[in-house]
Image (cartoon, rainbow, N blue to C red; front, side):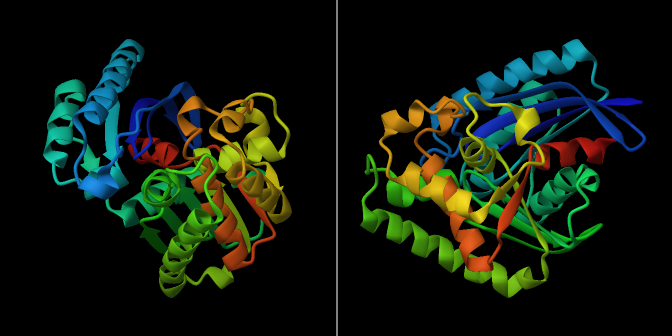
Length: 306
């Protein structure tokens, strides 16, 4: 058995998984998530803001304490869309080295896609869904699309994410206007054209959705009064449910969204965009349902250390 620590720093959140890896099993010791909005303003300025870096490093220092406390033997830190895009990513890298003693890997979209697929598909055997899968990881700055059965067959990362689409199109609406929603949808659809050109999405038989936008939409669709990972993991949400939830979120005020029991406070302002991305994927690619996975790139990073 090997105790490993995986840290995933995305555009919206920084997450930690400490787990014991033994054979084909990964057993959680600690799983944490903090929304730090590292990518705040990156789409506009091309730089990581000082306040965003400070929030991220504060969360990471707490994670470093947990890693030491639990005696993890191996640690891997990955960073994704916001850091890939930032002109001053060296500031981020040096800060991470100071905190964890290891250099973060600013992974490409293709590597992120492979890690997402690895993390998401390990548990699917219990459901026995039809293969190949299209695994979709909706992040803050980018969304990864991975087609595969037992391994990755094709992948593409595109720059549509809940933070990026909110800052680009939906940030001034409470709720957003029809024109803002249409502009965001057109931006998403253009990115989906790029995905279709690189990934044979029509071959997919099961859509698997990852990350906070997907799990929040699923929680609302299931009528949960609070976030419950056990209810969400491997749940199946129909396209009609996704369309209804998305429509409701885009027509709700910020205060109304904040009152939803499954809503993390850090997602209140970006969930409309995240739901819209999922909604457009299902409409454009013709999926009737999405299987929700609580396991994603973070679990993939942990498996890579096992």
